[in-house]
Structure formats: structure tokens, C-alpha cells
Length: 407
Image (tube, rainbow, N blue to C red):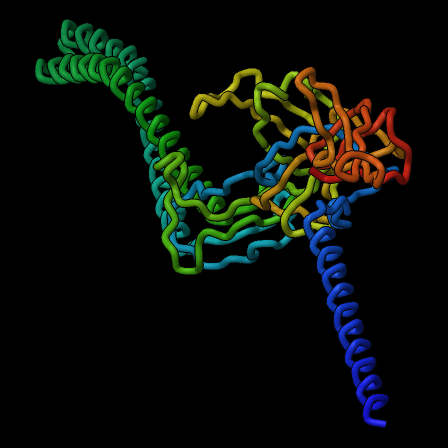
């Protein structure tokens, strides 16, 4: 009985040792497998680094960056000086040619007109007086009484010789005749003087008339009107502000308003000399502005500067891209990028430029995921078409739907 009990206990101990040894062996094998898997390099490609070859549209272009400008812009300044009394329009309002924009205080200008008119009337009266004096002197210079006075003298001499009149009577007739001659001689001299006075009075009338015209013109100038159809880009004065005349101060005169025709606008941008040779008049362009990021406006190249501008050793040329703007959405001074289309293709096979690899000979290739390839990828040579800095056209070497690895 005792011996059998001891043998059973020994068998149980042996089985326990085998179980423990087996468990340790399995654990060691698992550790070796896990360590081996951890140390082996992974060939799985991050899905975020895969991009499919897919069809789409692509354009090769150059971008001219600048500001939106109206095709026509006019700075309105007053020809008259004065104080602003009324302003009829504000920035953003539409305006027609000849429409009244503002008015200056007319009180002093109207007084100037009245004074000028009075001076003209006085000058005209002086001219009439000078002409009357001239006509009188012309008549007197002809001496109409002289022949009669001469006849009286001759008759008085005959009568005196006959003893029919006294000596003093004859002498009186001689005296009257001499006075007539003197009067005629004086009138002849006065004709030239009075003629000059008539000419002077006519000049004074012309001067007074010019002063009246000037005063009336200044009064008209106090009403400032629009020289064009368009929109008010800016209002630069307020009621009560003093305005100086452009006729007096020229370009430094007070700016009243700035008007512009925004039915057609343009972007005046700069294009690098490396790209300007590819730009030509009439070339299509797409314009994007900050205010309408989701909208593209169509335009065309209308001017290319013949002379480049150099700054910081970089030469650029100004290029004007015009855009039709009948709705007035594009406003002056908006920042804009004009993408001038050099070449455009539609429905072609495209891949990200970031997936393209070039060798030392400038041959292009891409990598695709391939579990059987080295490092889980395979390199394929491709032939590229146009690129735009983001996408590249694939002419051959890749099929639609294949996924390329971004580098």
C-alpha cells in the first residue's frame, strides 16, 4: 500500500515538470518569432503616401500678380476756388457724363459777376462818349464855318473901302475869321487824340467783357460735373472744405473725387524675363482675386511692356491683362493673380509632381507599391508632358488607376 502511493506521487511530479518545460519552450519560441518579426524591415507603404494616376485638366501658365485697375480713371478737380456747399454723390455711386457731382458756394462768385457786368457797362458808356467826341472833332476839323467867315471878311473889306462900315466892324470880321481858322486847326489836332481815345475805350470794353466772361465762367465752374460715365471710386472732400483751382495750382489743386469706368478692368502684373517670351497679345488668362476665391474670371493679355524693370538683380516686364466686368464685381485695388495660359490640355492622365523622380540624365520615373519588389516598391520609367508645379501629365509608362508613391 505504501509503495504504490509513493509511485503515484512521483508520476504526478514528472508530469508537472514536463508541462512546465513545455510551457517555457513555447514561450521561448514565441519570443524568438516576435523578435524576428520586429527586427525584419517592414515593406508596407503608408496609404497617405499613395496617389492614384487619374484623368483631369492641366494648364502650363505664368502668373502675373498685381492690383485690379479700372480701364479709365479720372481725378476730378475744380477750375474754380471756393468752399464746398453741396456734394451729391458718394463713393460707389454710379455716375453719368455731365451729372453734377458737387457745388461750391456761389455768393462771392455771383458778386464778382455783378461787379464785372457793371464795369462792362461803364466801359461801354465811356466808349460811346469817346466816339461822340471823335465825331464832333471830325466835323470841326472840316471847318464848315470858315468859308462863310472868309466871305464876311471879303465883304467887310469892300464895304470899308466904300466907306460904308467903320474900321472896327471890318476888324471884327477879320477876328471872327481868324478864330474860325484857329478852331479848325485845333479840331484837326483833336481828331487824332479822340481817335486814340476811341480805340482805348474799345480796348477797355473788350477787357471788361473778358473779365465778365471770366467771372461768369468761374460761376459755372462752381458747379462741378462728371466728365464720364462710370462709378465714384473715392470722394475726397466734404461740405465746408476749401477747394483750390486747378487753373491756379495745377496738379497740386484740391482733389474733389476720383471716377473710373469699371465696366472693363485690368491687372497690371509683373512677369519674369524667363517667361515673358511665351506671352503674346490676345493670350487667354484666368484671374483670381482674394474676395472671390471660388470664382475665376476670364481675361486676355492686352499689353506687354517693351522695357523691363530691374530690381534686386531680377528683371521683370509689366503685362496688362484686361477683364470684362459688366456687373462691377471686380473693384479697384483688389489684389489679383492673373494666370496667363501658355498651354492647356483636358482629360489627360495626371499624377502629383511630388511622385516624380529624375535620374542624372533627367529621365523621369515613378515608384509604385509592389510587395514582391525591393523594399515593397518598383520603379517605372514614365514620359511626361506639361507640368504646372502641382500636377504632371503622363504620356506613357503608367495606367489610369495605378497608385504612385509620393517622395
